[in-house]
Length: 347
Image 1 (cartoon, rainbow, N blue to C red):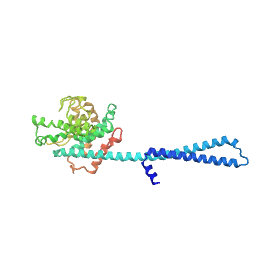
Image 2 (cartoon, one colour):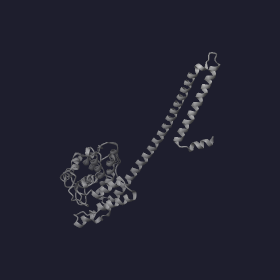
Image 3 (cartoon, rainbow, N blue to C red):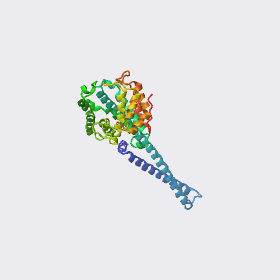
Image 4 (cartoon, rainbow, N blue to C red):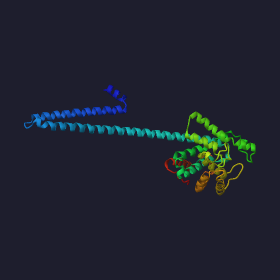
């Protein structure tokens, strides 16, 4: 018996199902034949019995019995087996999905940590990364409401830009402190030096891409790092590309980055009021920014104001998010996965 159990455990699930069906059908067949023999014996022993008259009916009843029993048993076994398989597959998918989500959360946390480490060189930027992430997510979500963008801006696109956008200035690790933190106006040489951060950031991400292989996340992060300082009219840097040559991701982050730069205090300037930030971006439509994206920005500029207030650079515990702020950041980034067109409200 133990040998049979050992052999049975070695079989695949599909082989076990076939084995059960064969055993069940053989048992039904034997049972049907046994009942037939008993019925024949009973008819023969009866004083009124006539085997000739009963033979067609007997064969028909035996056939119906055997087929019916076999069908019922097969259905029962298949139902039990399929139910067990479905439950096993569902449990496996749940475990895999949970592991994948945890991996994504870990990746996102590491990315934010590395980006924050780079940002920590400039104490004036406050919660710049959190705001950039939320501005980019909100603008991308609003764009998805337009048919021409719905195929491009998927929920996964929205979530990915929310994370990859925090690496937009990762190349600033290669810029000297004397230039990066200079409170006054930059010289032409200093400006040229600081502009190298776009290529440095893209090269850094390209190196990672070479080690890990193709990834939509890394591709988007590289586009943003390289091109978020390009202008719609072609006068930006580092490549001087224009209009739709500039990746959509970079055009989105360009608006987010400029709004944040204007609305917060920097070593070389005071924070602008929200209305002046909006006016500056509006005036830059068709020269600095994609004019259609500016139109969309104007429809949600109130959300930008709310994000700027909630994640203000001078808020308490600026080095660490409060629980409420963590929940808002997580909700806005993850809501893109749940809704066809994300419409998150910042409270």
